[in-house]
Image 1 (spheres, rainbow, N blue to C red):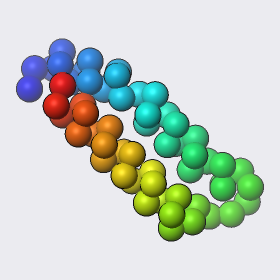
Image 2 (cartoon, rainbow, N blue to C red):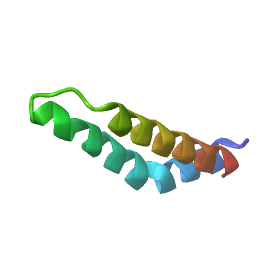
Image 3 (cartoon, rainbow, N blue to C red):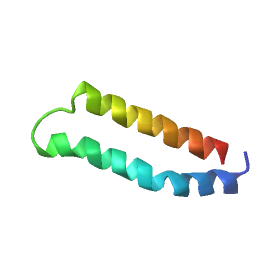
Length: 56
């Protein structure tokens, strides 16, 4: 995959990645660990964003 396509895909996925990071920070700010459901949702979103980046 050309680097330009990889960078473009990453830039397009940044909002999704940022949202997932924010969702994982909420429980930490509340003084608790993320629940299993929160982890699974974050991993699924990260996987989806990764696939979008890889697809270009």
